[in-house]
Amino acid sequence: MGLKKRNKVSAEFSMSSLTDIIFLLLIFFMLTSSLVAPNALNLKLPGSSRANTTASTQMDRVKINTAGRFYLNGGRMNIDLLEKELASRARRSSGKYKFIIEHAKGTPTQHVVAVMNIALNINADGVLAAEK
Image (cartoon, rainbow, N blue to C red; front, side, top):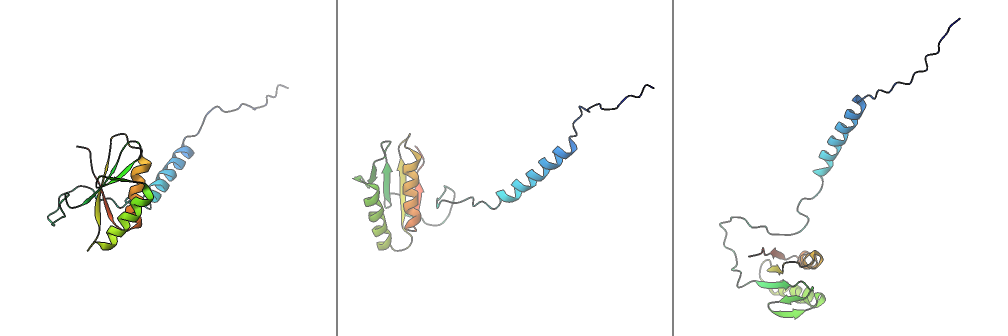
C-alpha cells in the first residue's frame, strides 16, 4: 500500500490579520495624540492683532549668548539672579509682566528653555524673539 502523509508546510502568510493590527494602532495613536497638550510652554507666537501692545523698547530684554551667559537689559547675571530680578519686576508691574527673550544663533536650547521656565514660574509672558 502506498499511503502518503500530507505534512507539507504552507509557505503562505495571511496579511489580513496584519492590516487589522495596523488599523487598530492607527486609531490608538490618533486618539492619544489629541490628549497631548499642544501648547505646553507659555509662548506668544507672532500674529496679527488690533489690540494695543506695549512697545518693545519699554519691555525688558533677556539676552542669551552662545556660551550660556544671561543679560537683562545689558547687565550680565547668572540664572538664579535673573530669576529673582524678573520675579521682583513681575510683582511690581501693573498687569501681566512681559519680557523679550533674545538668543544668539547657536545658543544651546537648554538655556532658552531655562528662561522660558522662569517665565512660567513667575506667571509672566516671555516673548521669544526671532532672528533678524
